[in-house]
Image 1 (tube, rainbow, N blue to C red):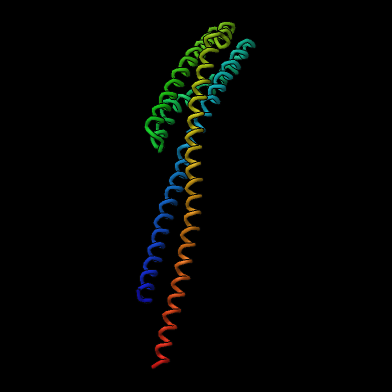
Image 2 (spheres, rainbow, N blue to C red):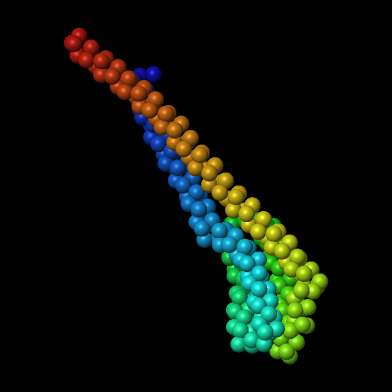
Length: 232
């Protein structure tokens, strides 16, 4: 094979390696960016929502208990304040379970099977929440009837405690799912970033070797030309 042919072959191969490097780099970077955006806009907010469930539930229980204590003191102005906050937080929790989390879940890149599991958890949490709300509203109704003892017994009773435990278990199931999905995506980002680094190193090494060989061939070709000129 002539030197000129070797030079052309190596030059073309070097261009091909450069194109492969650009294509794979672009592909990996797009996937990393997509996963990063997915975490920022979808998975992290879903994880926050899962934690908000137990937080909102705790605030609701707290407001009912504060209202009962205020009723025992016959401080019905305070009862109104606690009831107002209860209604606000209750509306936020209801919207989260019935609408917000499901709307955000639809944007997730996770499998349909995992989405179905989360929908199931959300429906269970919604049912648990409605049971608790029913008892809490009965407690407020008892307060309105100046029966703080009944209100206290309702929120400290066995049924209320059982529903709280069921809600807590379903919250843990959902929170664990969100943590697992978030961790999987972060691991994928890490693996793709590592692969991109190694790919860049390997292809850079290949290109360097090709350029060195190309330079040696060009030098050899030039030496041959000069030798030919001198003989003439």
